[in-house]
Length: 292
Image (tube, rainbow, N blue to C red; front, side, top):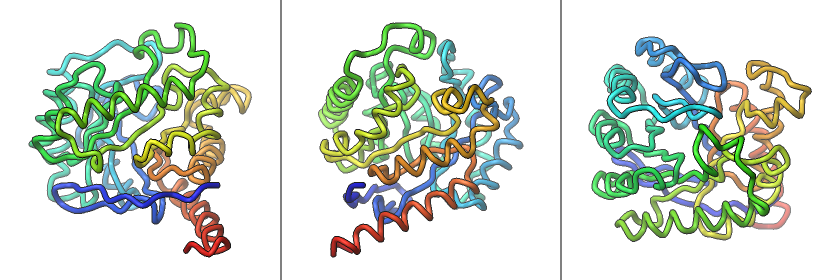
């Protein structure tokens, strides 16, 4: 268990305090082929309703995505991605009180989503696919989440895995953060995500969680998304995505105890309870050390 550093993430509408407690990022996929089986099949009204339900359940951030990044998926055209997410953003404007993160790897989508109300950009390619996303974040003054993915969705689970996953993730995210800073994004506006399940082997997913304090040494807040991932299903004997809530709870707890500031989850109500208990363990440890 490590001591989480406190960060302040500036959004257009507010400042998010990271580290005092774990923030929950609820996932809404406006796709017909989400790996987790929770895609709302391109229905803007259903997506908006789910977002509002997540807000009531305790989500601190809503992560909206219009492109599946499940293993084997191909990239989606920007026009189709916009057709999926912009109607949802318009329906939520003025109704959703928590900030919205746009999950995209395209600067055109990030720009349009920001115009429609998104306040955070979540790039699962860490600027590899479209470096101009950093320019959008700089110009719009939005936080930027940089996630590590080995390869791309179509090939990430079929190509050889890294020999040293921790070294590769740390180096790649350090380089991505430096690229964003060179593009004018303040260091204080960056969040790093090691990309659990994205081009990692079964064992490497666990290793990255256990060694999360090493990634924290880069000096950025950390986001992790273990929710319903394949390594949990394999651990539990092949249970389907919809039956991985308890396994996800264990993984989320481990992420928090190892220093995650934000956890990205599908089951918000359940994980809100998990995070509350895990945060209590962290705070008890701080008090024991005379820190809190």
